[in-house]
Length: 225
Image 1 (cartoon, rainbow, N blue to C red):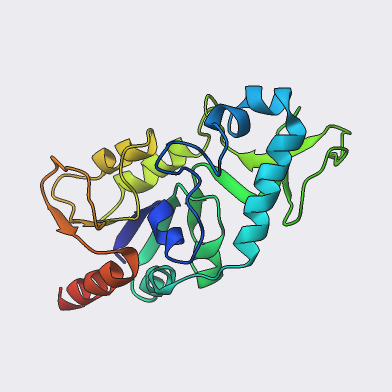
Image 2 (spheres, rainbow, N blue to C red):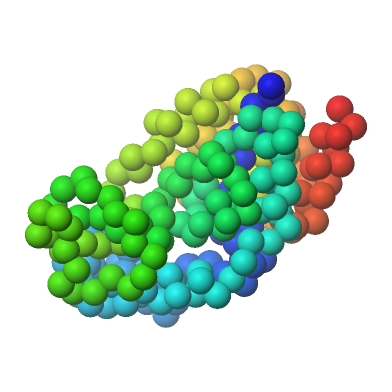
């Protein structure tokens, strides 16, 4: 069974009505990124940071996967599919995808500030919420300046890809943007984006569409092979 690896970003979730964190002016929902997406910001004002992610979590509950999510999940009928996402939402899973690697963490999980414990946490996180060892918990989000623990696994998946699909990402955020360079030479790459970044790689088919329509194009193309 051929292996399809998908690199997904904020654009696919935006079509479900989920705002991308960063606005055109560089602010995250009106906040400087250093305030709400760094360990230093959390240390300075944990209440602000927790409420920022509580709001994101509430917003996630109000949206549903779109057809691009469902189309990606449908590929599992004929392929081994691994989705490597920069998104912290659970829309891929809710659409039925079973192999999802979250590079930047997950909104519906929390982790201890002092150990490696990760908890399922679909509701608000408040000051005083603690792990089993008695430490405050924080969002399970990879903040700026922190290591990306899933990147090595993501690299291994890309190295075994027979087909690569890139959807909803500007390919500007590293280390995620470098993953496409780990696929084997001559691996077909489908890049879905209405405003795609420049690609030097060969074997890239650029589909200048949004995710929902672009995935229809990819499905049609794969069915012809």
